[in-house]
Image 1: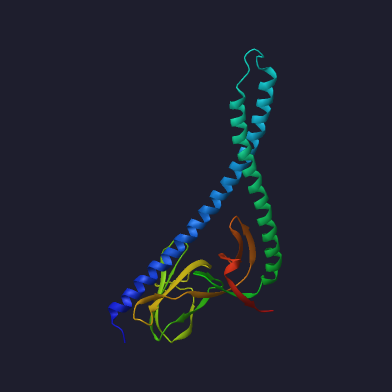
Image 2 (image 1 turned 45 degrees about the horizontal axis):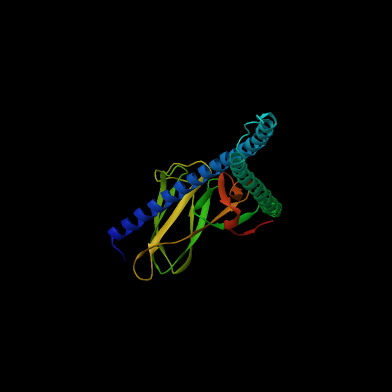
Length: 240
């Protein structure tokens, strides 16, 4: 049996890992917003290119024949804008390709709606006041579990003695004070001891009912109530 100091250390590690997962999710949402801003910027550049061509043509038509504008200057500016236009077209074509791929993924993913599925992720969906997950321990011994809400606030901590191999853990949605929390997206982390005696993080596989699919700039996501999980993280599904 390990000492309380060791258990405390495992719990601290679990809390830190769960907070980190919540922070990463927030950063991903910010990246998606930045991508939308980037798309608007590309559209603006395309408009500026067309405007440049109009101004260039007008200037050539009205230049002083006895003192023509330097062709080198025009050529340099035109080359720069042509490069921008080419990049705009490349990004537009890439966006179309990604969109087509996502359409295929969404079409295939529709069959998941209403079914129970599992995903290897730290995102823990609380649905109808219940959540569950599994993890694989490298050896038998104590493990610490920490759950945070979407803002990174710790709401639940727990310890258990794991067996070597697959272990399961369920949560009734009550926080450390015994108060029932609202359904939504939470984040979980599990810390235990590796085979060499060092602290080890154990990846979690959560379960949830798929309620919908959404498209984002980074890919297709599966909705489990208010929880969001990338489609690529799914392990499988079951149910009628």
